Amino acid sequence: MSEVLLMGPGPSPVSHRVRTAMARPLLGHLDPRFLAELDRLQDDLRLVFGSSAALTFPVSGTGSAAMEAAVTSLCRPGRRVLVLSCGVFGERIAAMVRRSGADLTLASFPFGSPVDVDVARRRMAEVAPDVVAVVQAETSTGVASDVDAIAALAREHGADLIVDTVTSLGGMPVRADDWGAAIVYSGSQKCLGAPPGLGPVTVRDGLLKDQPESRSWYFDLGLISQYLGSERLYHHTAPISMIFALAEALRGLREEGLDERFRRHRKAGAAMRAGLAELGLRSRVETADLLPSLTVVTPPEGFDEAELRRDLLFAEGIEIAGGLGPWRGQAWRIGTMGEGANLQPVLRTVAAIGRVLARHGVASAVPQAAAAAAKAWTQTA
Ligand SMILES: *Cc1c(COP(=O)(O)O)cnc(C)c1O
Image (cartoon, rainbow, N blue to C red; front, side):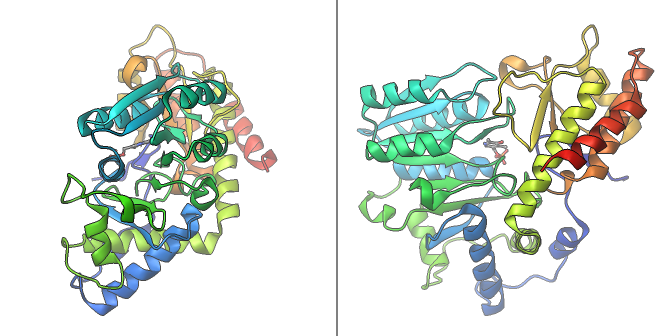
């Protein structure tokens, strides 16, 4: 099978070194050599999470599994939970909170807008929540919310903060310690550049001491911490090959350095937007809070957008995604995540979209679009 360039909202392209890490011979999950690798991985996760917390590790499962671990740890009947949502993933958190039996207040903001901090302040004063949850980078709309400000409000109210950083971790700054967040979680297949299958989390020191027993056995962070802490007691079999892959991806991240990595994502996002704009594809959202890792545009009018994406996939070997929720059929979501956040994949994507448009009779200036993308790459700091 020929290789597809993955430029959707995840999974993102995986480097050769990460792929070959998955082909390493297995070790047992209690082998000291495997545990040493896990230790290193946990240290690298602390770096990228901006966290000093002891309990920092990858949940076995995708980003939604990490979300479930966070929600089931903190949300239960009798607790007031405020979810600040501006898209599909905020709504997913709310759906999990509802199932937990907690007293849910859902503050929804329009698709394409970030969380409005003034409204969040008012809702926190009204609800006096025990727990506040927010998505830093909303992958359904391509918009970032101001977690620094929301975290300050949560601290003022003494609420435990859950932050979803699935599309931000490794692509823009995450500051778990500075936020004072209770639990911050993510996924392996977006800006971290590993395949899907692990959901990194970091849990504030001491948080679990005050919590009653979780209703979930598999996602009981306290039980899991016995495997990941000094005791190394068996809880479940760690997905060894996936852990090798994530460890290798994080080693690459540490070598690159966080500042350089964030700069690369900013440059790639700016280049993608500039190239697409030159092709006549305008941003679907009007806000300054655009994600570096994901560009959301309005597909050309008068076409079956899904057919254009199929042409891009099968004729050009490039995957992008359509809209989610209310934007189904009305948006293209184009990622610049991890390995995809480089000039070459951006130029390939812009040129290929231009060719697809031309084949369908839409005037498109491919050389000009490529030039605009390259210029934005060079000029973005
Ligand atoms: C992708 C994503 C998730 C879910 O992750 P899965 O790996 O698909 O389970 C959750 N939150 C956000 C913001 C995401 O982008």
